[in-house]
Length: 434
Image 1 (spheres, one colour):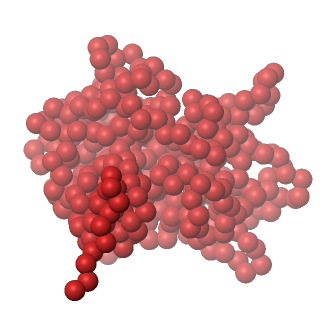
Image 2 (spheres, rainbow, N blue to C red):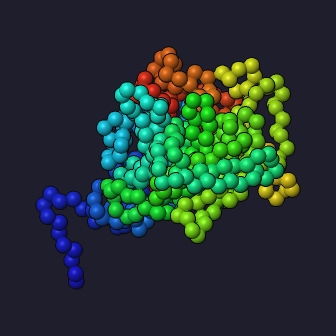
Image 3 (cartoon, rainbow, N blue to C red):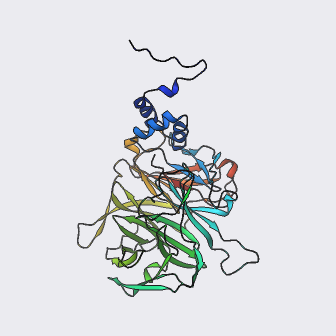
């Protein structure tokens, strides 16, 4: 009869746990950071985690100014945040030494979209723009550089235009513009980047991923897009992007909503066979009936987000000032009607929606059964909340708000950034996939 070899004195048998047991334990760990630590215990646990990946996503994280991660805790109707004590090292990135000169302007699954401020003495016309933009996976340290947000090109610009369907004017797209300087406020990705299998290395590979960005500098708004392998951003200008907008990819199209008027636009892309970069092939003003104001409100703000395979519009209504919203409505875009229309939702199907200035997402709260987050709620994390600044008195760095779509209640969401208190910038949501 075969006998099992005895481990050396003092050696641990934890590495010999059956892979299915390791996978079952990993699935029950709600924190993405703890899952990374779990996988790094030994090679056998890492191999088991690859064979038995978690079927449930981890809890959302909050990325605080200075690139510090915090895990929210939503319990007993009194939302607070544990201290943000873990700062991302961002190894091998332009922010490794000076994270306070950078910002997170987007995220997709396990990837963050980061920028680094252009800095030069004495000041020049590019001062205040972003000098670098890159994607980083904080769990594997993989980095992919995007084109510089401020650049000068002498290779000759390439320009194209498409008419704005159902609207006036056209959308003019320019690549290799002689000079441009952008300050990116939000970047969304159409798909995860193809970063390859090797960790801790910098890569710059071709992929089907398209990055779309909104720039706001000197009161001027621009829409730009690129692929990781491109040398220049494609700058888009037109009547549909002259004011503050929110953007989201959905089923291959880029949707743009004016955050004040609610006007919706859709951009389609294609890659001509004679070019290595995509171009805008169609731009459309979606003819949708304007949504009414809520009773007693006199202004509103819109955000666009995906949830459960649907394209949703989150509308916040304000009265008198922007200091306090008085109500929230959520609408689903009905593509089957002619013309399209917004249909109000009375629930979120067990999901929760997470809204922040540069990263918005949905989370399957009811399906995960985590106690730390409740379903059918909208967690706001942006400046359109009262006292959302560094001047909040007391022990908390920020005071945001949560809205329950089930009963219409609004209550505070208190955030303590711990050692990062007072660092310029605003916290944003980060929803890792594994």
